[in-house]
Length: 143
Picture 1 (cartoon, rainbow, N blue to C red):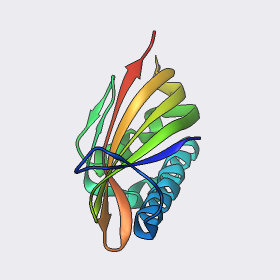
Picture 2 (picture 1 turned 120 degrees about the vertical axis):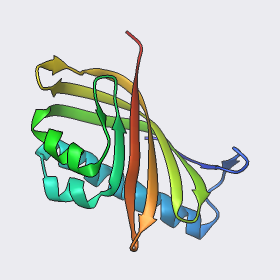
Picture 3 (picture 1 turned 90 degrees about the vertical axis):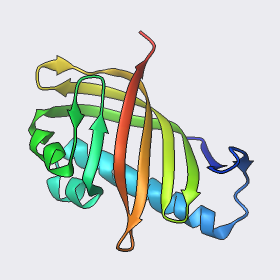
Picture 4 (picture 1 turned 135 degrees about the vertical axis):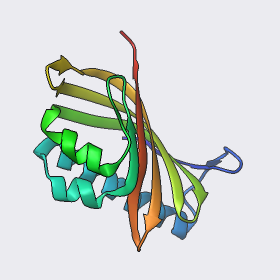
């Protein structure tokens, strides 16, 4: 897994010499992995605690406009594999980070096969001392 930190204001790649930025990246990366694993195991408590209440999800097959809608739809997710690579972290402010990565997903949403390779963008915000995902958008790439 390649991890790259990019400054949001300049778009320039940034070396990991700033301890605060390294800490932000590590915290969000840990929360991201925890959230992805929660989808695999249908752990609603972790999913709920990992997103803002006004969370928005946009995928090729579904739009969900709140965390409540995400939780209601979880029974439709039958994800067998969710692998990420090439994560990039753009620090937009001390409490807002845009994460971009490639995801390989194998599974279904209801009866629809959603397997494939995707580019994902997720906006993470720090609320009450914790990083939470505020927006998730995936776009299918390739065939």
